Image (cartoon, rainbow, N blue to C red):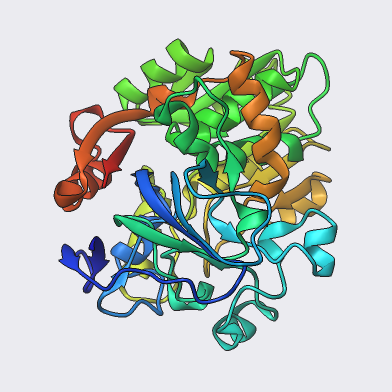
Length: 389
């Protein structure tokens, strides 16, 4: 089959690789109908996340049609159209039983990588470094889905692929981030990042009862989409002297009730703080550019909530004192998609959520390296590139 493979920093190629096979009786083989880029992919494409190996198939946000079924699979059958969350879960460990799916104890076959960095291993992810299991990714014609009864969700009739594809990762990540905020009627939420996750966090916050959501970004086309498609107020951080002061002014001096960081370790910024982050990152003295996260911490009102969805590694200049002295609640996780996908499918069926506007660019799999190039450089107004196998 054909698949998009990582071959080094900023070196992506579509190659011919062996077809996946049923390995365990709970597996299915999926014919991928649509997959999409994700901002977190850029971290290992750019070399900031280690443990990639040449030839690794990438891609973790996808949907498709079941082609082959292991003998122990009960809930899906050949021909079913399904969407699959990016984290692989066993469904039986303590974490799965408590809906903490991305923390599954049993799906990362290489726990030694994370033991040192995190203290404990987390669940496996498709196509996302060997620290997360080394599983083959879904930018391919076919992909093996382990634990299919836990990880495959039937797509209701009448929904287009573009309405469903982002329920694999962007939508549940954003929804979880909004849920972390414990939104009360009349609340004001600020979201850093107008990419797929930030847009979904914004729409989710409104679904949960927020009165105002303010999105912070610098790309005019993305800010326009945030206003048009998810009803956000917007701040272009490149056009204001201080994001913190601007948000304080917009909220009557108090600050947002909760702040959501949907950016992560490659945050862009302005001023000496951003220059400092870039220099230390280039020298490998830390892995993260943290301006968005620091702004979120400083902007949030006293007693508010900080919801962190961006992927981070090692950062200094972290204002822990502000979190403590302002009495902030910090909530963060990788997305527990198996908890949220059924709820999100209901929102889509009812017309309350339509993520299809995120799919600004469409490519055949053979052109996926070009898709990642314009996605990374945010050319031509690209928010997400989707690939057809």
